[in-house]
Length: 107
Image (tube, rainbow, N blue to C red):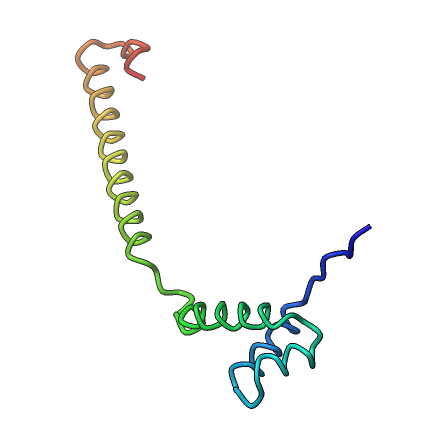
């Protein structure tokens, strides 16, 4: 039976990547020190560098796509509200004109 795949915690990966980013020792030395393959250290380092800009993004900042979606939703809600008011007005006028409740298909 083969070896079981190793899994590493986020804290361990962060320590290894920080050490690799400092460049005080080579990737090979870091890999031997922590008992991982050098390719794995390089991969973690490149992932950290690629995701670095996400760290500095404000968490409450909305993307352009989210803002557009919210704008559309508010327009839809305005339209629905306007239609509800118009329907209620027409029901009231129907009752005034004909003295009975509007047909079922109107409600």
